[in-house]
Length: 156
Length: 156
Image 1: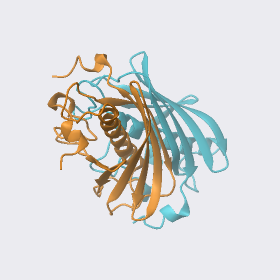
Image 2: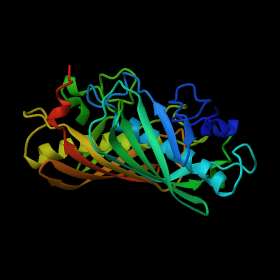
Image 3: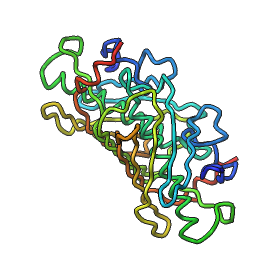
């Protein structure tokens, strides 16, 4: 099954968090599961905060990319279009918030679950929960906006 | 000059964002400049969002670590203590917010400036601006709390 990020055109698929064409990135992949978007990610041993726990900065990066990916997918859905149709939706983050509910243990797979709160014009708001097993360890909100034209100009 | 993070004891210096002992991390270093904390960071070419711009997730990670570092330094100052005295202050993030004001160009050095908004008990709030040259590209707020005892248990 193709991930949401697999539909990003090549010139927009270099993101450090989720770009399939970024050799050094995290390669986060997001999928619909009904009305919820999901991404699974197993941090590397060096993605540490304090020993034994996952870096809050890494979690913020995963929340960020899962949020913009979910936003793009939601924009297609809102228009009744498949993700392989034109024009392309590609969102960037206007505002990111992450509340760290408890330390996230380093080792097990993380599950990010996204819920679309609103789709209004060029703006989509996504709420995301990060959990390990049955325990939510962080909660995030991404306010995503359609990529401004100014960001296209530097695409290769 | 020693960075704030250089005062973290070895067992708490493995953070992906700022740990001097993390071989794969960003090694962010923060310093006081009067009442402002500053950190300079030049992203790598692969720290991209869309081509030509810095990953918002990376920026969140830098804001996170600059915030917790500033919080620790502010806690020592509030007690009139130097950072090489005991007991150790080490803060983690309870809540992180980043507003992306405009795309951050990839290439030039970034300057993060932190202002301590409050020091109250185990909680310190830090506001951070990310700028490139004279232009602020992101603004963040970190609510940092003293590391809970539960996070010490897994330290090597």
